[in-house]
Amino acid sequence: MKLIVACRLLLALLVDALTGYSAFCYQVSEVEQAVVTRFGRPVRVVTEPGLGWKLPWPFESVTRFDARLEVLEGRISEALTADKRNVILPFFAVWRVEDPLQFLRSTQGSLPGFRTKLDSIVTSARNAVLGRYSFDQLISVRPGEVKLVDIEREIATSVAATVRETFGVKIESVGIRQLALPAANTPFMFDRMRAERAQYAAQFRAEGQRKADEIRSAAEAEKTALVASARQFADQKRGEAEAAAARITTAAYARDPELFRFLRELEALRKVAGRNITLVADDRTPPFQLLKPDATSTPQQSPTASAPLFFPSPAPTAAP
Image 1 (cartoon, helix red, strand yellow):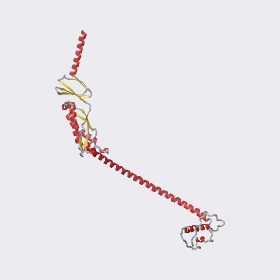
Image 2: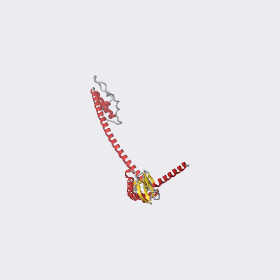
Image 3: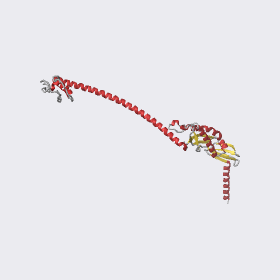
Image 4: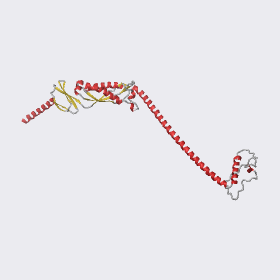
C-alpha cells in the first residue's frame, strides 16, 4: 500500500516538474532566433542557442524565427522592356531574418504575409529595372550583350535597403529563374532569330570566300613559279640537247662534206617539191639538177668517207 502511494506521489511530482519546465523554460536551437514578449510587448531577443527562462503564459511567450536562408519564388507576371517588348521574367529571392525584433514588429510573426509583401516589392523593382534595358540585352546569340547578371544585381541593390529597414530582413541575392515570351511575341522572336542567323551565315560565307580567294591566289602564284621554273629548266635542257645534236651532226658531216651537201640539197628539194604545187625551175640550178633523169641520187663517196647516217625518202617529181 505504501509503495503504491509513493509511486503516485513520484508520478505527480514528475508531472509537476514537466509542467513547470514547459511553463518557465524555453529552448532555442542553433538554427533559430527568438523574441520573448510580455503581454505582447517584446522584452528581449535571443540569438544564441540554449536554454532560457521566462514567466509562464499568459505573462510571457516566445516567438521563434528560422535563422537559415529562405527562398522566395516570385509569381509569374509580364514586364515591359525599354523597347516596349513584353516578357515573362519570373525571379527568386534568397533572404534571411537578420533582426528578429523588427521582423516581429512589422509582420506580427506572419511568414506568409511577409512573403506576399516581399514578392510585391521585388516585382516592382524588377519592372523598374527591366524598363531600362532593351530586349536585345535579355537574349542574344552574342554572350557579351546579355545583361541578365546586371539586372539581377540592380534588383537586389534596389530592394535590399528597403527590406532591411522595414522588415529586418537581409536580401542575399536575387536571380532570374527563366525568360519566357507571351504568345503574341513569339513570331517576332522567331523572325529576329532568323534574321540574326542569316546575318551570321552571310558573315561566315564572306569569310570563307575571302579565305578561298587567298588560297586560290597563293596556289596560282605557286603554279606560276613552278611553271616558270619548269620552262626555264626545259629551255636549258633543250638548248643543251640542241647544242649536243649540232656537235654530233657537225662531226658526222665533217667526215664527208660531199654527202653533207647532197643531203642538204635533198632536204631543200623535199621542202620545195613536197607540196601540191606546179613548179617551174632551171634544172641546172642546185638542187633542181637532181630532178634530171640522168642525175644520180647520191654523189660518189670518197674512199675514206663513211656511210651516211640516214637516207631520205625520194622526192616527188616536179612538173617542167
